[in-house]
Image 1 (cartoon, rainbow, N blue to C red):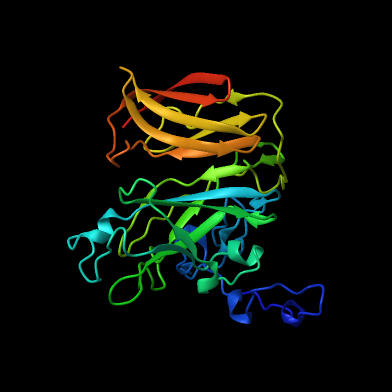
Image 2: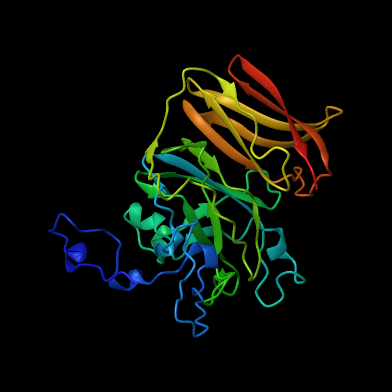
Length: 323
């Protein structure tokens, strides 16, 4: 528990943090999905507890010391609302009506909104999603000011004919989604973050919400300096991991603002998925492919071709999905 100093709530003081409340000091670790840490004491003379990330100690909210993102970043959420429209997967709530009801990401127990001068749990931190193709897939991009954190924890709220519906809840694992912004590289004491990152698509679920594992940000002994490198070339880097199952991170860089199209094809040249199709700023960008096609169906094992077009730059890269 963090007992915040009273100067954090004094609007006239240099230590003031907008949006912060005294009760925001309780720890809800990402590695437990926001649930309690469990410690077993078997009655031995010498007893130690397991630390986070291979260290001897735990860190508040299981935030790695290298997890502060020191440069602005555009973060994209991707949500499949189809399960919320079906009574078999949404049996106790009023069903979601595409094209009528409104969907929001609502940060929950997350420090990101605090870094953006919003509240940790309030409705002021909501992000409205839209479905550009009216296919049940909803998305939104939010520009985050620096510094901020890599741990993204939230719930989904939608309006309905009987009032708002919010999934998750409770005090144990699965109470909220946990996803992570992934770095483009970790090299010794240096962590490099992208200028934009697209989170893997999450399906709407009533409870038992997905909790991702945090990425490896290096040794606790090597506390890093987070940097953003403005690239001097156009490049499509090898996806990581490769081979992969089921998700992989695709990173690319562009020198100038360009309309970027990033697509996945199977080995016979049929398009499987469009990952990016928009104008993006110069910098290093990353996106996650979760091995699903444009209909949200998981594809089979095999070799897939990743193709990028950005201005006059184009490149094709092979990826291997092994299940």
